[in-house]
Length: 128
Length: 299
Image (cartoon, rainbow over all chains, first blue to last red; front, side, top):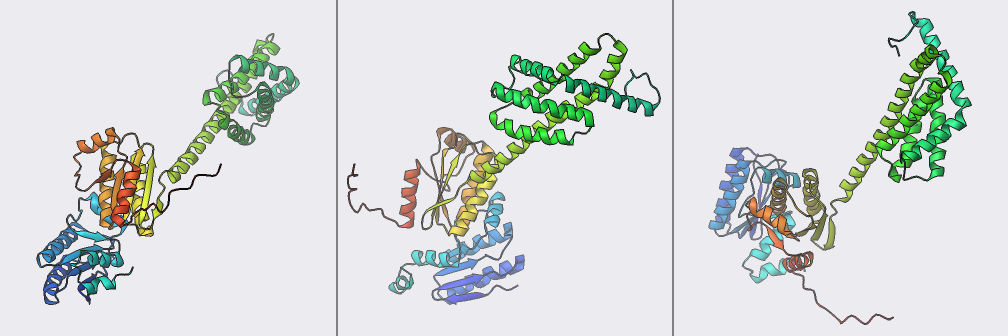
């Protein structure tokens, strides 16, 4: 299952649509880190709303993605973790330390908007 | 209902004679109704049972219990009595009547009636024996029925109340756009902790909250598992993109959290609820401005 990655302005949005195998996750990590450089993106959003389970490998991969992308000069935010998933992750000690998380896509975009180094173009796109 | 003292060996006539003895017994109890009831009510007062009720109420209840009792003896069926016991329990439990009182009064009635049988048949010992053979099992059965009915009713009430407490125990209130508060009052047991987590995480999602103030001023202490659970809840909330501010930690709870070695970088704590809400407003970018001095209230 390939994860579609959309370019939206200065951001990349990867929407996970079904459970991912470890191979898929590695593929996602590779693609995202590559694209951030090619497209000169400033932020990456990984939307995991559709996932019922986020296991230790997925957590580690997501954390690695976030850290690698930081090293490549962009911010990452994971959005849409379900309440039950969040609590079972914490129970297993998977807390995604040092990785930004937001409620949903909209919040994630708002977060990246605040985080961005704020060229004027960005601020005008913010509602309010 | 068989016991070793029976003089009749064949089963059929034995049952019949038990029935006829019960009939005789019931007739006697009906006849002596006023007097025995009086005696019973007097004993109840003397034994200081049902102190939550007035004398008149005791007498009224005693009358209906007596009639139901005799009826159960007569018919040998306990359904009506069961229903009555449940109904009675429903009425008297809110008055603060205790289990030992209910069992006590039923046993008193059993004794009063037994004494009256002794008085009536004291000249014919064999007959007394036979009458008691019929009376005792039925009377014990009645006592059990009433006591069980009472206890069941009590348990039902306790279950209902627990349910109500559970529902009331974790309110999730929105005080501003994106800001929730969860005031927690009372001891948090593991079950309540689970429920708290569930409500909090669900509340974050449905209200699209960014900041949650968890006020535990009303919680006297927590044990380590619950403290751990609390910390995990805070982390889970972060995964949903919300910040949890915990306010009103008592010294005991602070001690517990330090003992379990909580990472203070993850826990956002503020002294009191007001401080917590102010901090939350700051995080959300609100600024509270006093527009005008409040006018003096007209007298």
